[in-house]
Image (cartoon, rainbow, N blue to C red; front, side, top):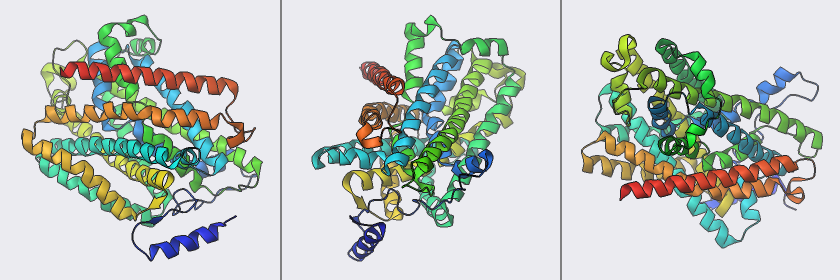
Length: 463
């Protein structure tokens, strides 16, 4: 059996032969087991603090620019009705992210590595292509959202905004040099910024809280044609494929005694706490977006299908009343920019994870990030130039990326539920309990069917 030292030695020899080299057996080698954790005798809060962080990187995928227009649009069209959809979607996300984290901790493999280990080379290559395309689609959404935010804040034309997003490459490289905990802290800061902005804006909007509470109770009205379409959009944008790969890897950044089952069980417990806390924050942000749309725009005939239209409405007294102000619209754009920056960090890490896991190759992070970003920037830039920077088209492009993510979703969900349900792979202690496995398969089936329906509806609308 090869030791970690053998792998590192092989990796070092390979690096001398070129930029592209075989990956070793550890997921995200540069951060794996680099964060120290306290002993078993440490208190709850000290241990939780050590394990907190990975959940924040996962949570940003649940509040990225792809979700914003859908949530605000849901509130503006149907009031508080679809809050129940956000609640159910968030609970499903917590279940699936728990499985992903447990897989990484119990097996020492991320989802890409584990899937590749139980499939052939050709199947692994096909799965890698699909997942890479999903990550690129995510990156296109972040480029689009960030470019629109820069346009709203500074008046930059969209083409210039798209080109400026290339600078994200250097931001991530800088953060990786100062340590993974610094990346986690940076992401948490941006999440807090987003949440603070929308708490303030909702407080100013003065929603009817009795109706907010009622909105969390599922209603048959959701199944009406228009409401169902919007609900499908919310659900379809909830679980992102790359988040499952990401979470199964970055939880391994914590140093854990892998020979001790109790140590692994403790890691699973506190990682689940971290994940659920951070996903609760994402749930709050999505609720705030919908509540903001309901409180300020419900009943209006204004078209709020683009970021620019929401930005303009927030400072238009004819639409939002006395609370309208440039401050509200500026804060909205700041939060949008923060969301895009957060998501671009996690997209890069996810790309590295799936490449190393599925085809067992490594390339330097700067090259990985530059290639991924250019693949996202070039089509967005071409579309911007062709359409003259039409924001409606840019928002349609963003929605289209979410539709592609729906296609890629079963590729990650089905292996995840199957792998974590296997006692042979996970061990008897860490395999899914029967009730958890049943919920996982039900959630997978429901999300796959709903996403398929969303895709069919989107295609039909094109014709």
